[in-house]
Image (tube, rainbow, N blue to C red):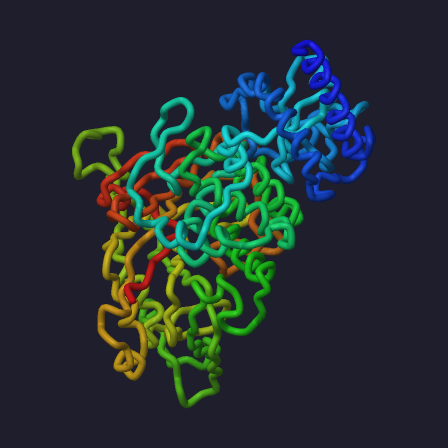
Length: 541
């Protein structure tokens, strides 16, 4: 009786496996579309699936989580096809299909690797027998491939201060993970790391209900941010490969992977592109980008020849209200700050071969306070811009202010970096004092228009002295070219520059320094030692 029962059970398994083969993707055709989401299961198939699950248990011990990496583009490693791609959970490689005559099928036979997961449906199959496996022990892998968050988890995401550990035991904190530097994409990494800590933007990307209906850029950035905030990563770092590749293609190679570009130019491009992809229009607060960063500014312009006559050339420019001038209100996403000109001669430049240890002989680095730089927007300071005299006045303050410190100047032969140190307080910076008096009186309190620093992007290194490149699209009066110029790998090797991000943890106010894969806690006072380039401030209301 026992032998007959065993024979009956063994004969039932092939029939169940034969049914599973009929549900194969394209019946062995690698180019056929995925049919994993076909029909609800019946009681008969559920019973067969239960038997298959018990049989599949003997292969689950071959799953090697240390070999898995789901950050790269989901394409078959042999055919380079993007349709119906499976990941081998034993070696981590990607293969197409699971039916006969497919690359995954041959891999399971030739390499004796049997457990595969569909990267779209997250269903696990055993090959070459081709039956589905349902086991809770694989849920951690599914969560890494496509992390999901609930509204409650997102609301409490900034409150946690606990460290997690990856498979190797390395400690990391969710949201403060390193990003791979593939080639010269550090200028992209710092922007993504900063935007991932802007609460409205981050929450939107974490809670988008159906990523399939979003653009490729939104989908890949949302997936990247979700993995950055995932508390159970297999490795304590994330690769932005898919996002970087889409950013290069979407920008028509304006931003490149193999050459460093300007981080601020990439930030402005990314904000405007995300605004459009998320359904934004020209209307105020039409997307999460405009809700978070858009403010309003009043601009008064007058031709230089119509301004008041100055007694000396270095006297400040004064508008002449009795002569023609124009006035308009304009929205803004970023505020640009001009540094004082770089000194032509540094202290101690002469006799630099003598007494080099004497502090008086060493070159001094100029310093300027941030509160003095933002006076450009107080409504009374007049600046020269593109042959005009302009006066800026803030009218509406956004929830987050992005400040861009103009450090680079360019001519036809070289690009120079202004090394001026910007001194600032990381808390309670009074941007509200730039508003007109009537707007200040309408504020509920003085502290409601102060801002705290939450992200600081710095540029370390010197600019190249002679690139001999020209950019026909740049503006002669702009400190940063309208179209960023990319440099070759040999030029960047001489450049030896890098972008670094400093991020504040909202729960305890601690600061972290993120440079590619390196993440380390840092004292807030150390932020001032780097050359600030982009700052993001959060309003205290």
